[in-house]
Image 1: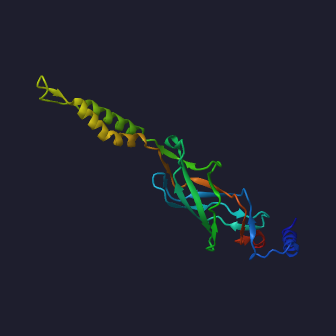
Image 2 (image 1 turned 60 degrees about the vertical axis):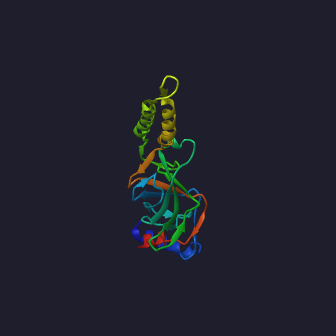
Image 3 (image 1 turned 90 degrees about the vertical axis):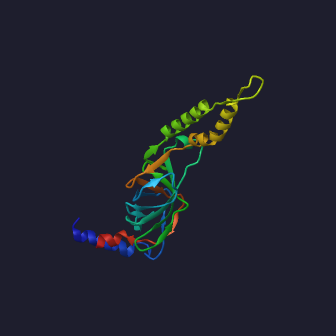
Length: 218
């Protein structure tokens, strides 16, 4: 097909397709995957906001409109994953609040899921399990208890062993500190440049950013 014939075919499609003005809304369908990338480092010990960018154009269900163009800004927030496996967890939890398009349109994403590039909830990268800190804390606690001893005069033989009392008081004093070391959970660091995805769980009506037919004509 020649270029002229191709352009004529597109023109006919534009003229005779069902009316759908760009000012109207189009549907961002359920299960749509939005690909994105982080532009800053995330650390699980410090929950808070973060920013990322959409890396690929996102289309409506008819594939006629770009609803979210690549380069749109993502506003998210780091959250700690709290469950029975937290001490051995290697993932950072995060949620996506919104996406801002280049035309300053803000799209609410609070009802959708944040996944890694493989589709698993949360995101993983570098992990510090604090094993050395836990070990040293327990060792220090044991040494303090073993070194606590003492004697004083008194009693029938003029001597009284109060080492057990000192040891017990010392252990009681430092037990909360040792317990803190045993409760340490891994610190997960997600480096800038890590990719992730947003899984659309509920359909959204969004004003199109542009039509793909305009791109063909231009």
